[in-house]
Image (cartoon, rainbow, N blue to C red; front, side, top):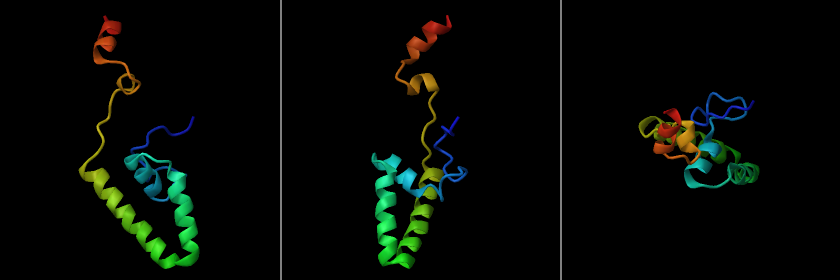
Length: 90
């Protein structure tokens, strides 16, 4: 089963700092578009792109540290209301 916890991007095996994934989540687009753009720009200015990537990594880390997302129970994240959950518990 794949890792479904996207709050811990650095700890995953398939990311490097999780920068593209985090920016994609925050701004609502697929992270592969940013990955492709970075890959194309690496061809023209590799040092600037790699430096920018690690700077964005620091910004993402700071934003996740100082303003973490609220973790919802899975039932509420799937669209059920809290009253539905309580009715099922009774």
